[in-house]
Length: 55
Image (cartoon, rainbow, N blue to C red; front, side, top):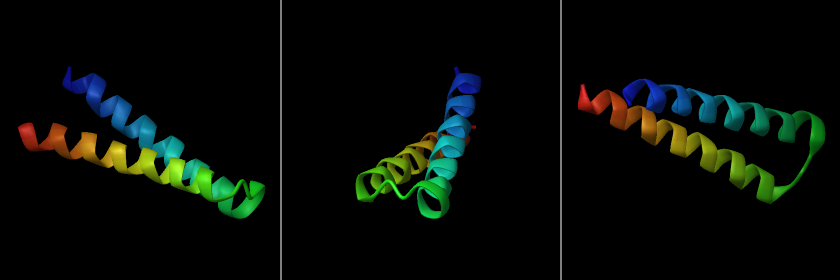
């Protein structure tokens, strides 16, 4: 279960970071996209913190 949580956390962080960068420099999707990708980053960080806290 921990491996699934670690992988999902890293995937969320990658998607969130790439989304924020592409929104800022390439696509200019707007505020909703920025908040969505930032939320994915926050969720990924929370999952990663809980997985590492249990160990």
